[in-house]
Image (cartoon, rainbow, N blue to C red; front, side):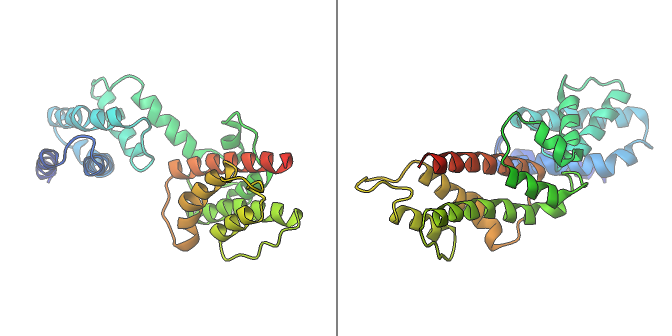
Length: 250
């Protein structure tokens, strides 16, 4: 079974070029199944065969994956660690820093909301903080069951904040969605000075956010990973800071 699996991987390498999406998917799949299902089998095999196979997994697969990824994906991080630890036990020397990189990802998955917030030297929007605390409570960030509803909540926060600023400026903001709300903000000169040809630059930031961050979770269920959630939280916080700063200057 193992021999067939490795032959299939070598065949897939010949078909998919380095750096392509399909090649990355193949690397992740190999690491995941090797670390999760094959290591326990190999541990009962002759040591020489076990060592040679793990060496192949590290040098031919993990090394390539790590070279193209600035961060190890949480999808296969535990399996990557399992392979690296097996290699160390067998006397192999995995690339320096790779194991610590994986361990940092695992630590990130296990952290609480408070630890997550403390890990970034940025001013946090308190409404965003409240949403995070209510979503996870005492659960770690690895609880993926919270990811999709969290994305809906934090992206809706931007829309609600913009609507609140319009109402406080005396602008009726009856709308069907975020794009409509943004159009109202421009048409009623909240995001565009009278006579100006272009809206204020923050308009384009909000337009991008509503299109790329808000739109997808608003219309369908999406399966997010930790890295996507982390980045979305940081982006949302930045957009809120920019929106709040703009609103207090007008």
